[in-house]
Image (spheres, helix red, strand yellow):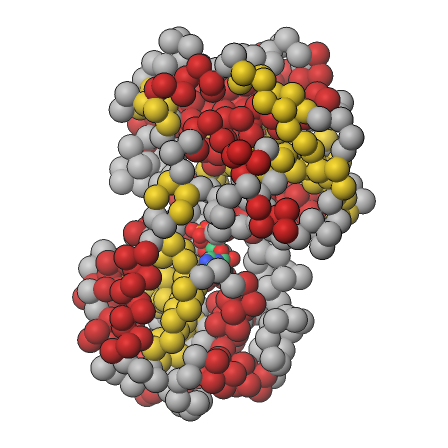
Length: 490
Ligand code: ADP
């Protein structure tokens, strides 16, 4: 098939979270299966800075994109990392030459509506200019969901897209991208689309909602999350709307990039290891403790955390119990970026518990690998979690996750059972700090009092398979359905 992915993030070029991991890896995996794959991304400032490293070449012809009554002219860059994979970058400096992707210091950029509607339209204009004739355009989250609408309206009579279908993946329904109504001219929406049936939401434009109306097929990133979004609070206000399309929604569990996240070959950690020989993990733990200036002691359990510092990740639950928890014999290491309020909280915690708490505020892939490898437990008390990748990396690196029973965490982590010695992590249900604290206590007593049980769970966790094979086959089936659906329209 000819598959065109459009996304605001994709590894290795740019990422703020799981969206980047999934799109970048899926593109490569599809190309390995023999599909002809293209991927379009914005040319952000940080990608520009690594132009040489990524092997970007500029195309000679500029691209003209009409938005409302304006024509925006942009430059296109290209690289071909795999035989069947071309990656295109849209350079429009007014929109993308900024320090961050969606906002700075906890505030969204106020022109995100313009930025990403332009990017969505440009991805289609680019396909026309380069004569790419996709069977499927795969859209990801609100940033690119308008493409589903453009295909069925503005580009409906474009011969190149006669057989082009759209698949929209919801990576996180908590982000829907609300734009002011005043953007409608620029975006290309008229009063017919500004009904609550399509784009209207609280007197503004909700691009994800409209995308869900127009996409041929919809996927989300785990089977359990696909169920949760059909009722509230999982539906983030869109559950009844999503129920209308419930037969077109497929939950496909994310795979992981096994080249990047493999404790036997990981290039970022001081010593690799495996379930058969865990001696390298001890070296990683010592290095991690030294890195953060904590007491180097293999007997003290290290609890790691990596992720966006966002409400979704259960920050309140942590804030409600960490002071108590830190009086116990354990160490805590946090790597995160996002909301400055939470960042400040963790920085203060480190000041209160010197030698026991290590904090790094920022985004650092290499450090994320060291934390996964060197920790004994991984904290992920998310309020909701569409799929979650870090709990998977943790398990494969022999680091037992402590998670709330929600979304993809339920699909990936099995709760530890003392009698049968089965399970791969520690789970709690209630959205309370008490429940989290008790579960950390349970994990801690397992570490100190039942090291054999800890080891059994660790080995079970490490031996699981979270590769992309199954996921890619499921995406192929969804693409076929979307193509079929599109044909029925013509
Ligand atoms: P989400 O998509 O909600 O952010 P996931 O668990 O699905 O959460 O994916 C998060 C991804 O982003 C993981 O690959 C994780 O290692 C990475 N990540 C998040 N924050 C950081 C950070 N501060 N430094 C390095 N990597 C990070």
